[in-house]
Length: 151
Image 1 (tube, rainbow, N blue to C red):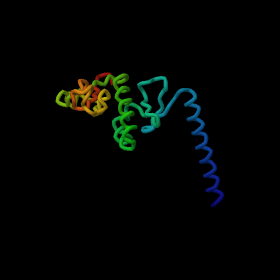
Image 2 (cartoon, rainbow, N blue to C red):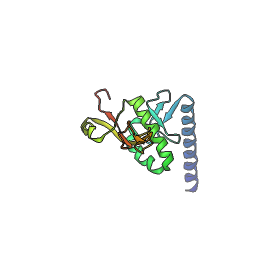
Image 3 (spheres, rainbow, N blue to C red):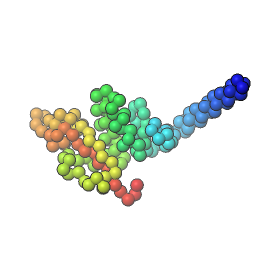
């Protein structure tokens, strides 16, 4: 019985090693993996994966990944990563920055929404001694990706 269990463990270790070598080979070919859903994406597609410096996550997983990941980070790291995430969403996913919550579109017309500190005033609401014109003095901006028929 012990020899059967030992053989199974040996084969399992071999399979694990083969899988790791396969992942390493894919990385050499420019294919990277989403940490959340484990799907593979071409690293040449800048819109496919967001890299926070520790984890890479695909656009589909951002809405569930960010609350978890942001809660694990130190405040300064969270702010830096949040600003990077906002810029990535704007650059690659047509996100709109909305200054005031009463100007948000209906939830049914939103694919994604994130409240983020204003990167101009760093969430203080003031800039150059007055109200920040980028966030309207609120210190917060809404990042909204409208639903589209193409997605």
